[in-house]
Length: 196
Ligand SMILES: [Zn+2]
Image (cartoon, rainbow, N blue to C red; front, side, top):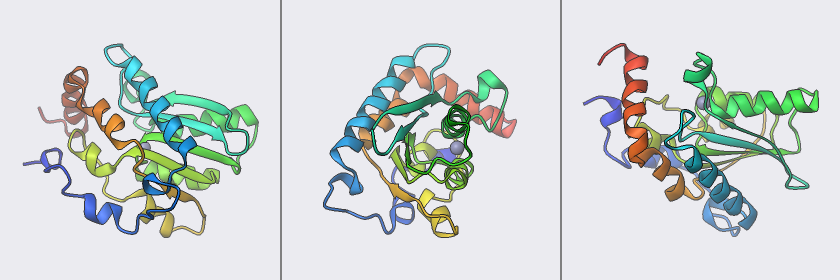
């Protein structure tokens, strides 16, 4: 059994160690965070069944005004770029839009816990908070993952960032579970390993 065949929840304990169950509700999320995540999952759902379908969708939002600066989907296949994850694309688009290298004062919302590449980009960009839906453990049931959690990476960095999640996890996991994603997931695993 490959990694993609792990049983659901097998990785949950180590990945979620130290999660703060704050007074703000779901895993430390505010009502606004939950609303934003529901909206983000709904946006990704609308793309299912289209050429752009993906369970990975990310927003960069102004922490003060709540205004969304950018939204991006994963575009690895479309751009022939293994680094074109939704979070990296959103961070790049946001800094270009602001003509700045820092996203201090902004929040990264993402339907899936950022992989180490994306969490590294979030730390380098200086976002105040990262709020995610599905966990890396959830995603690992469907596609290959790198098993370092967003919190683990943050703790091994000089750069500070609040990591909040999982938030609206069910709606985000449903993106992976959607039958329209099944064929794409098989292709991703094939591309990643060169095996059928
Ligand atoms: Zn990533």
